[in-house]
Image 1 (tube, one colour):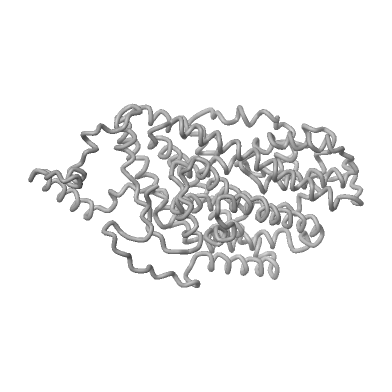
Image 2 (spheres, helix red, strand yellow):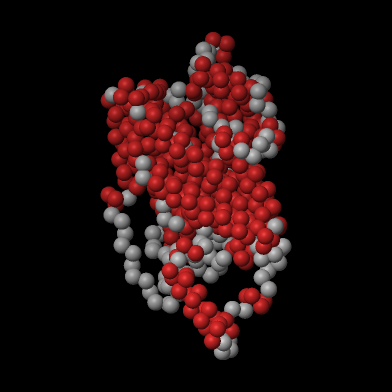
Length: 506
């Protein structure tokens, strides 16, 4: 891969870029807002609960952009590659990695809860457990959720519906079909691809505007969570929360850290590089608002845009390591608390069912509880009403789930890029270390990839006057004038540079 990393086109070293002071950076203000929100919710619970509209409005404004961004980036990535078979292989590799990663995460959870057995001694009677109205809706949804429905659910009833409902799985399906069709159109589809890339830039510009309100959104969400559920929820079941956090941290350091070491990268430098996104996740308790920032930073770190555009959005539905750890821990805790003995074989069967049910509720509100209820209902040996035992503390575990999901998708994208031999490891190492690296400069994808059906641009077109001059050929006066005019137009219109839109600083 040819990337400009330290010098401009003329080979001269660039002047060092002045770093933004720490108190002007987004992550500092988001972290400050989280601390203030916790204090408000703890000291004035009524005021904290009243802050709910602030947090939900910010999260909704972010979710408003997720569907269009996912659609546009996947379409742009697929339509701009010359070899569709390569895209298919990348998708197959990603799905294989996702399943293996999910199994490892679930095994981590099963081993942890079998070692510490926090549910022993609770002796809960499922027949006497009272179910709240909000939990009853989730239980009912989970009981009617079949293990195979995630396959049929991928195909939407309409093209507009998934964007209205925010169903990421269905949006991915539409985007893949649209991208393949646009690629097959050849040069006729080039203007459409150009429009897709320009729309992507507009979406990320809107995202930049909304991100300025991130500290306010984090404050509202955290103040409401602490004011609504109180610190008592943390202390009453602190053991289960601590075990979940410890297991998640161990999974990140051991499993994901080992994968990063295999890639000759450092998991901790990557986490530090993504600190703004982590602060946003901790403040809003969901990983969706951090998706655009992750895509932009991974592409800047040397991952090809088509890999980022395909793997990251798909991972948000299929690669949920944090949710996998949570499901295995919660299911076994409920079994222990209700005195339901499960053999090793039954636990492995539970794991197999969770591999499917965990995908069925991806992107759905209360998806973790729906997936858990669907799992317990499918198995039939653990009472589904037992989820009320952990309903009160679920909010305090959602941040950790989102952080692990986010980290797992970042590592997965880097691994798939390395598997495809398209990862610039040296550039990624330098970017994660905080070094100043030149933005990537990509070729014109609309002209190169969509010249005509599946074929490269003719040699006559590729043989530009500048190339002939490099070979020693003397260009004609008209060619020299054309080159000069082209250079002047490029300087006067920097927007013509067709870098991926998410390379732009947000």
